[in-house]
Length: 358
Image 1 (tube, rainbow, N blue to C red):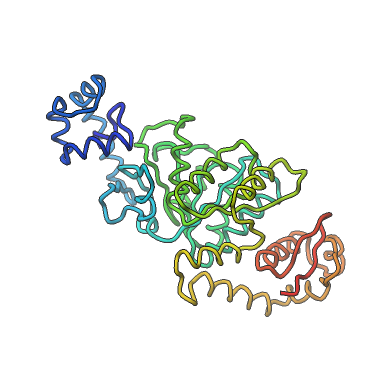
Image 2 (image 1 turned 90 degrees about the horizontal axis):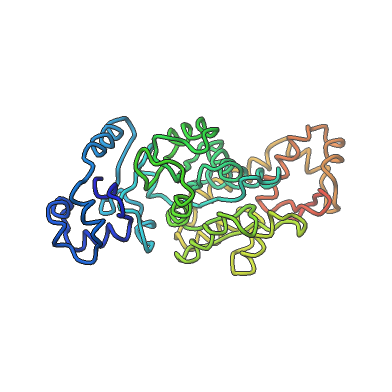
């Protein structure tokens, strides 16, 4: 912990120093014997901030707080495989869930209502089936993805660009508490680290590095979400993107990724089909079991059957479905989104829907 707090020591330098001296105390005791470091770093190693380390250990004393080193068995296997894994992870919550299969869901901080709904419903569907949802606790798509996973009583992991003694943005404080209680919040930055702009690209590589794949819901052409997607590609992970209207500027980043080789996603099963082969899920994995349970629920739910009576293969608007079924607009919209995720309903231009025949 003293070494990670030393000015000028990042993941690459940390690894280089330990390659020369595997015992961190030897690094502080004999920095003059180290090769390939500058005078400023050598001087910093002669004066470690032990008082700050004491304060870090006091943070660690609280319940459900952990520090996981790179050679700890609890360190996430997928994250260890990236080019520059963080030497330490500060974790608040259930540390064991970091080892489980995760899907990253990221996107715009200022999404459309439809983009927010897609993030929430994809996360709820996939988390309900056993995949953990990883995101960055930002406003917009990130927050909606976390909330969707929580709504399904699934696990969600928030990767942040600050120390874990603060929440950024502050408006997501309640959400952060829920995530820590039903998943984990992690950071490579020690307590006290403020939200600096340069921290967030580093945070993004952890989001992609922890996950089997990354789903981009909505993103502008120049955005942090595209940085996360490209990091995922560099790390050899899958990238998924939801297409949108050619008139929506938040769809252009997704369209660009699709042109560059990202998988076009229309339903949650598109993701499961791809990740199932990668993760070698059993034939009846929790995700598939949950998918079957949800399909059965649709078949036996009276309101879904009522909706199906008025939903044919010809396009029909939500307003018309509301008028014919007597259901609320909110209920109809939610039901249509679930059916669309299952591939049983398709959305059309003009806000209309029709059966797919699935």
